[in-house]
Length: 308
Ligand SMILES: Cc1cc2nc3c(=O)[nH]c(=O)nc-3n(C[C@H](O)[C@H](O)[C@H](O)COP(=O)(O)O)c2cc1C
Image (tube, rainbow, N blue to C red):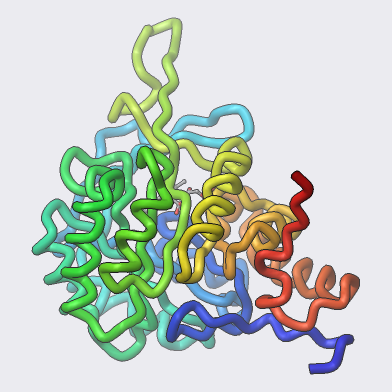
């Protein structure tokens, strides 16, 4: 590869992405809402809104609250269910030249396994196992905060699918690197982190919580330094690729994650404010690699200079 033309493609276990930028689960729907605003074929991949076996209505309104440098959400995994996804959304997503990563969630280990088996289909390029949602009473973050239960869920998914498996981790585990190591042993090809941080806001005039669910998940620029430190920690500790998520709104933000050891990144909340952010991040990473003489993402990933 000539120095003037960096190769942006990246391997996440058996999954090859044309560039290291995906859009995060829950912030890009099933792709169709955003297709008029940006060409999905420019993305490394799309992670669709987490699916459950049956459709879910989600949490009571209000479901969103703005915060300084971020937002709180308590959607509660509202989704159309796996069958409607397969019949109504997957054919459309297959039409784009990008990787389709399907996020799965459940209340029991068996539910994750059943979902993974049902999604072992053409057009699904990988599964992201959501063991980190903070807005549900059962499952979600409860599975991801403990290495043993994370192992159980991921090994069940691993047995049920031939697809690459990415485990999505929560910042609320007492030791995220231990959870990452547990899911690697369970057969995960990669980990992605972070899902949102639990947060809360109160309307002081009514003294009511601003969210119907009382607490919600904090996302956006406010969480970026927390996410970056955790990605650095996990990437230094485990041998599988790490996908960095949390507050990425510019190429520089994404580069921080790659430099500390992420092999790819996901753009979430920023898409709500500027739908083309993820594509701008792809262009900015390319420009930076040209300027600094990086030929590949592997050279850039983990290139942090630490002086202690
Ligand atoms: C409105 C909203 C809905 C989300 N829904 C999901 C979801 O269904 N599954 C999931 O794994 N993460 C979900 N997330 C978390 C994001 O994928 C991401 O991990 C988190 O927001 C941090 O990235 P960001 O700061 O770039 O948004 C959601 C986030 C937001 C803001």
